[in-house]
Structures are given as C-alpha cells and as structure tokens.
View: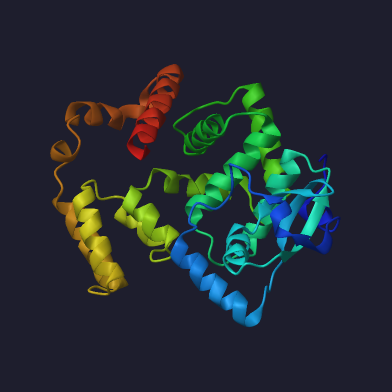
Length: 289
C-alpha cells in the first residue's frame, strides 16, 4: 500500500453490476450490529427506491468476489432475491488497503457506532504494523498512560511504533491516533451499554457517563428508563450522579487499601508504574470480557 491514501485507493475501483451468487462474505467483517429487523427495514427501503450506494468488493477471480463493505445492503438484496447488485470492484488489494477502504466507507455512514469504529481502526493498525489487535490495544493504552504522565518514557522502538501508527491513521483522511486513544474506553463499556449504542439508542457521551456506575443492574435499569423515554437526557445525568455519589468505594471494589496506595502512583519508580499500568489493562480486559 505504501504511502497511498484512501482517496487514491478508492479512485482505482470500477463501478459495475455483480452476480450476487459470486460474492463471498469473509469471516471477519466491520459490522457486528446486523440483525433481521434492520435488514428487513433496509430491504423494504431498497425495494421502493432501489440501491442508493454500491457495495465494495475485492475481485479474486472473474467469478469470485470478497465483500469489503456493505454487508447490510448485500443481505437486503438477498432477501429481495436480486440476482445482481451494484458494486465498486477493486483488484489486487492487500489486507491493509482492504481495511482502509472499509474505514473510509464507515466514515460516510451515519449509523456506525463507536464500538465498531474503534475496533475497525485498531484492526487496521494491527494489519499495517503486523501485530495482533490485542497487542495494538494494549500499546494504545500505554501511549494514553504516557501522555497522562503515568508512564514516564517510551523506548526507542515504541516511539517508532507510535510514529508508524500516526502515519497509518492519517491515511484514512479523517481520523487521528489521538481520536482512537480518546475512544478506547468504549471497549470496556458494560455489555448493555454497547448493545444500546449498536441499536443507536444511546450516544457515546451518555455511555461514558453510565459506565461510571459499577452496578450493572443499576445500569440496565437506567438504560431501560432512558430508552423507553421515562427519563430524558438531563434526568439521566442526574440519576447517574446520584448513584455514583451513593456507591461506597470498598463496597464496589473490595480493594480499598490497594486503591489508597495507588494515590501515590506518580511517586513510584518507573518500572513499578509500567508494571502496574500493564496489570490494570489486564484487569480492564477481564472486566470487558
């Protein structure tokens, strides 16, 4: 892919009609919020007004195409028993270019939730940097801790990796590494919050506030009230503040003494701070699983 930006890659695509039976959906895809109800709704819309946007395909042979982006449109076309679908077809794409095109397509969608967006950006970084997604995520958390002063230094190799990631993200023509780092918290949101975001019932900002509550039952109750319009946004904020203020630290997390020691985190030696940062990331991963 070299130094090519996403706009240059997309301009290489050919718009054409493709036989739906020749399209294969890869096991990994950017959409995790596809459900029967949303496909049914889209199919009804496409039957009335047609297909407004082409799907994106990677040509493997004359009669074999991999779907890059447009899973919902593809599924809706299948439901409508269409034999052909409008597509933009690319050839000889490497995995990095595929990921970049997918991200560019995501950027044009108003319905993409932050959880899927962050995961797709992390995967793209992993592809280009030749690292597993989990390793990329852990490194981004380390950069976050470094920027906040909790990790004092980065090694020469880590600084090189950070620069590579910055250059890689810039190829999206839209996102920055700081954007990804600032959104990392969405990966550790409670499952019910992520689900509400996927269903477009809750914005990231309110998910961030709700996730400060440690009791998942309380989170679920407040979510239900908000989604069913029993409370509005201002009332949701008040309820969140009330529950956070009423939660005793030792009752929520049974490590009161440890938490008190962590107040002197910045005074610890660098090696201890780095070790603690890694352990805290492991804890966050466990809580998010």
